[in-house]
Length: 180
Image (cartoon, rainbow, N blue to C red):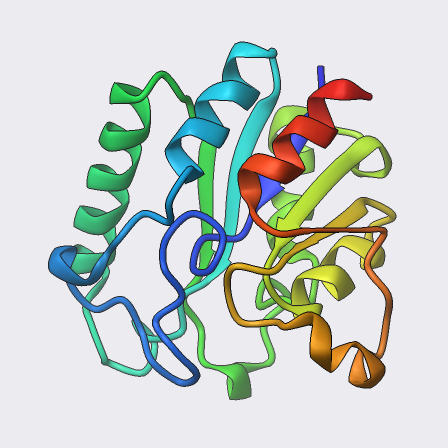
């Protein structure tokens, strides 16, 4: 069974923009083909987790209650489309707290690994930023960068680390994940 970790903003839903947050249900918009991709991974027997920084809670831009409502709706919509997320892990801390769970630190992945007895070296992390790539590499997971969120291919000369794989979106990455 493959374990696949997904970042949220820019992977599952539309990237809100630099230093902006998805602060309400209304602002949460699935990316085209994201629900289909998650359903496809689920049908192929993958265990899917979400690991995402949501510092807007720590900064007071939106409440934990709002984040919980957004998450509940996201999970319900994914299930309606035939997908299943095993568990969602968020870091709601501000950057300056120095916690161990804020990506690129791998605390969220380590927590899931402990809870579900996962080998992170045999897992994949799909994200839309180099921070996500760094998170994957910190635990020996394979990194997949998708280009439908924050990061752009034209910026690759500035990347401090190279992803293991690059795809245009989650569905394209999914086809790769399920063919190996």
